[in-house]
Structure formats: C-alpha cells, structure tokens
Length: 79
Image 1 (spheres, rainbow, N blue to C red):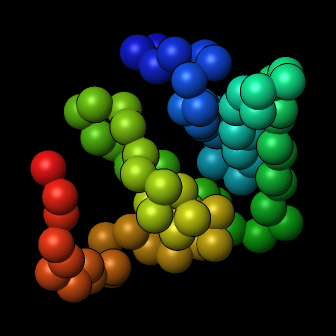
Image 2 (image 1 turned 60 degrees about the vertical axis):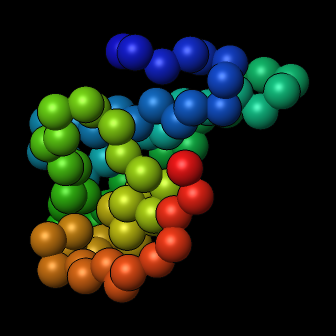
C-alpha cells in the first residue's frame, strides 16, 4: 500500500457500491477501525495516481461534499 502502518497514516477502504467506508489507523496503543455506512448516496473516492488523500479531502469525503466542486484559495505553503 505504500504507507507505514504505525506511522499515523490512515488507510481508507470502500466497498464496491461506495456506500460503506472503513478507516484503519494506529493510535499509539493499538489499531482503530472507524466504519461508516450511508443510508443514502455514495462516498466519492478520488482516483489519484499516488493513492494518497489529504486530510482536507478525507473530511470532504466523509461529509459528502463533491471534491470536483471545491475551490481552494491561495495559501502560503512552507517547504
């Protein structure tokens, strides 16, 4: 998968219908699975080449906001 299991990375798993999603993460004392099932609609899972999703994108996915309609304002990014 490319990430380190105990590094704080969150691993996202969605079913084929995209109405259920599981998040797997390590919280320093053990693994946590967070599960959400939608009664209506689907989760939008982006098809990025890297397979990575930003923290902001994850929040939008869980809230049901269409990622293509989101506009980001210019911000300073420290490299």
